[in-house]
Image (cartoon, rainbow, N blue to C red; front, side, top):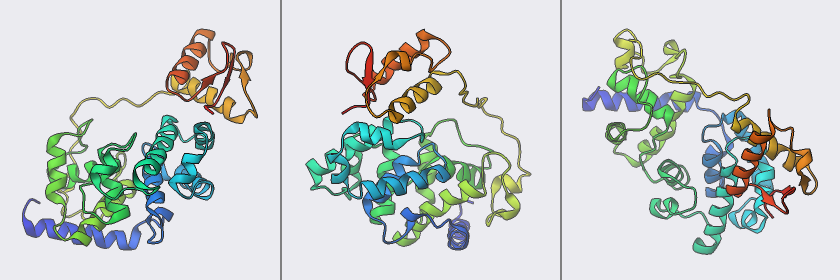
Length: 295
């Protein structure tokens, strides 16, 4: 697979498949603004796109530009975030929008360096926005991309638990030289991992590169790496934090501690989670017993 001809064939197959099978998502359309792309990339982190799209549409209607979001209270962003999960992303979006107004005249910056300097923006988001919003052929590596390349190129059932330098180098080596082809490859290989080359029960019979995939050709050997533990939810601090935020989002004004006390299995856990939400800036205490979303 490392040969130039094999890699070129991989590019043609995956990019061609995407043209036929890629999902028609609003942030992938040519008329989507850079802000729309930026918003989608932040929302989609660790969140299924089926849950992202309705929230994305609501946010774009309410805050169609960075300046619109920056002018709103941070608490409104947290309220509108709903149950997308990891609500600190809502605050980071508000901070990023404010930075765009202050540093970039209310526009999403086009350079990778300027994107990376925005609050809450990491390497993946900066590369993805530079590529998908501005057509810059950055190396975009998410979990789906890592899984496709691990299987197709290196013959492993799954990638490492965390991104390694070797994986980053592999993704860089696999990026097509042509600018347009590279930009299409970035979204196409990501989509292939999301729809076909999934973590559990990969649909190899539907894969456009099944005959080129080192893992499939080798008989799909089992994963032999470290144990991958699923994330628990019920009774965890994450669940309690989510319940507390939901009660605050649903309330027309400040909420008393008595109305929050049964948000978790025991009082100590509720208070601990409430303190952590205050520390994260997601909740604002008005007194020791009254709380609201940040104004």
